[in-house]
Structure formats: structure tokens, C-alpha cells
Image (cartoon, rainbow, N blue to C red; front, side, top):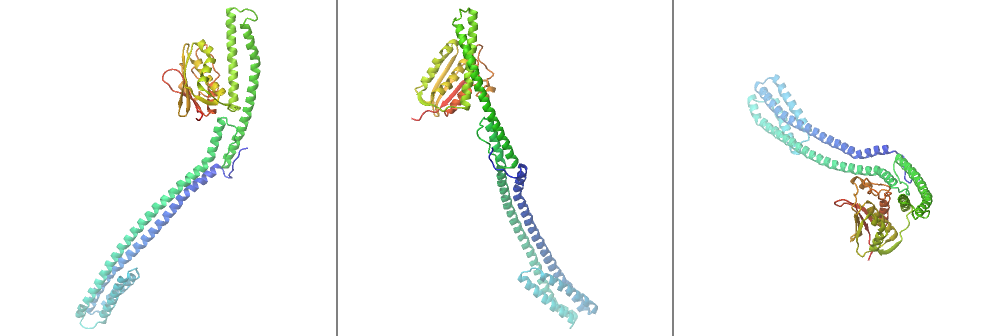
Length: 481
């Protein structure tokens, strides 16, 4: 069964929770921004109200002094009791405006100035309403008092303007502080949102990566490991379905292997009898054959050999892929191995008039000799099959940093560019095929050769070269000195 932890929520619900989590720092930042702006707006509103009150009260106070002086002059000079009301009104306005100005947040020096001004105004009002002596002379005697009160009111206007400027500077400092706080808050909110987004993305993509890895394993034929999908409920259910598919593919693979082995055995038994019968006919055991009969027997013998090789390749590849035997390590000469392969295929080379030149220094390999013989023989037979009549095959071996490098080059048609990606896939046969009369392959030789190279920790690849032909490069590790 598939292993993994299951969340109670689905992938879509987890995605919505992730979006909410990522948006949370931004929402907190917006809330804090609104709060700070509200604080600044409140301070600005209060500052404007205070500034307006100070400016208006101080200016009205100066106007009240002028009104009091004018009403007092009329009352004292004309000695009309009806004009007393103007003096009382001016005095009342001054008292009201002085009280409003006193309620404003004035510093101590301005409060003292206002107190002196109120005292002088009260004394002047008392002197005016007393009505003693010559009116014109009494009014002239009060002019210095009015001038002093007007000077005091001017000082209050100047102080009020200074307070307004101070309030403006304080608001500017508060505004700069708010902007600095907003920039810091924005940076923190964005950083947290990005960090949470990366965390949520990693958390959401992990089960998808596990599913992707499980699908890749199935595509590569690795059916021995159950998918380990952890996360939302629906993705874990998908992992369960993938595990069911894995087990089903493993069952089908086992049935295929069993069928392949059974069919191979059933085919080789009558094929062996057919080969022996063709050999007996060719040797004239049943009587001499004419030229046409010999030709037919030769064709039958070639077809029997071709079918026998195909079955052997299929069995070897199936064993290497699904039931590989452990490597039988031994130390041997690479030059001797290559020379033995050339001698083994001497008749085939002679029949096609193909020359093989190999340049191999005295290098010792520690590997499975049988598997390396199969590897290099597949490459050599492949080169012979694609070489033209009278062609040439070059085999060079050199020591490189990774170990030993062996290159086998032929003069055949090469590999088409569109076939390179699938060249080492089982049963694949490219567009360029051997010349007429040459033995066609099964499409398993290169796949089996790469399998043997990888079992030794090496590589097998097709490399580019100018001109016609194909060059295969094998790199195998050398034994430590």
C-alpha cells in the first residue's frame, strides 16, 4: 500500500488557506497604515483648530482694544450716557475674547502677557466708566494705557503666529515619522508575505513533486518502490491510485517475462532441429544438391541464424534488465579482449571485405569480462552490419581522466538526427538501415550494451564526427593502482 499522511482538507481548500495566510501580513499592514494616517489626521485637525483659535482670538482681542478706545473717547468727550453702552459692549467683547484666548494652550510667557493685558483693560474700563474730571483730558490721559494694551495685543498676535509655525513643524515631523514607519511596515509586510508565499508554495508543491516522481518511476520501469504521497486528501487518493497502477504494471511485467521465457524456450527447440536439418541438407547427407538447391539451403541457413540471434538477444536483454546476475570481477587486458572479438568475427568481416584497425595500449581492466565482451561485440557487429562492402572500422582506446575511453567508428550511413534521442531504447530501429543483404538487428544490442556499461559505472554514447558513419564512445573506470 502507499505510505503517506493524509490531511483532512482538500488541495483547493489548502490553496485558499494559503492565499489567506499570504494576504494576512498585507492586511495587517493596511490596517496599521489606516491607523497611522488617522492619528496624523487627528493631530492635524487639532493643530489647525488650535491655530485658528489662537489667530482669531489674538486678532479679535486687538480689534476689541481699538473698539474700546473709540467707544471710550466718544463717551468721555461727549458725556452722553447713551454712549456708555458702546463702552460696555467693547469691554464685554474683550473679556470674552481674552477668556477664549486664555483657554487656548498658551505658553507661560504668553499667559503672563495676557494676564497683564486683562488687568490693564479692567483698569482702563474702570477709569472710563468713573466719569471724573474733564472728558477730553481724561481720554488723553488714557491714551498711554491704550497704547500699552495695543502693544500687548500685538505681542500676542506675534506669539500666536509663532505657535502656528511650531504646530506646522511638528506636523511635518510627525508626517515624516509616519512615512518612515509606513516604509518599514511595508518592507516587513512584503517580506513576511514573500516568506509565507514560498513556504505555502513549497508545502503545496511537495505532494505534486512526489506524484511527479512516482509517475517518472513508473515510466522508467522502476516498480519496486511504492509512491510516498503526503498532503491533501485528494492528492493522497491520487497516490493510492498510482500505487494500484504500479502493482498492476508489476503483475503485467511478471506475466510478460514468464510469457517471453516460455515462448523463447518453445521457439528454440524446433529452431535447433531446423538448423540441424538445414546443415545436413547443405552437407549432402541426404544426397548431393545442385547449385539452386545449395542457394536455397544457404538462404534457409541464414534465416535460421538470424532468428536464433534475435531470440538470444531478446533473452539476454530480458535477463540483464529484470534479473541481472552479479558482476564477476576479474582483471584482464583490454587489448586482448578486443583482439579476441576481431578474431571471433573474422569470417563475417571477410565476407563483407571490411577491415578493422584497432589501436589499444597495454591497459588492464577490472570488470566482468563476459559482459564487456558482449558490450563490445554488440558495437562491433553493429559497425560491421552498417559498413559498406570494402569498408573500414576503427577501434581506438585511450586513457582519460575518467578511466579508459574506447571509440568504435564505422563508415556506414550514420544515425539520423531525429533518431538520436531514441537510439538506446529497446527494440528501436532507426531510419538508416544496413545495406541490402546484411543481417538486420533486433534493436536490443545498443540497449543491452548501455546497460552493461552502466553496471560497471561507465557510460556509452553516440558522439558527433564530421563526415559519414557513426562513432560510439565507451568510458569505463580503471582499477586503482
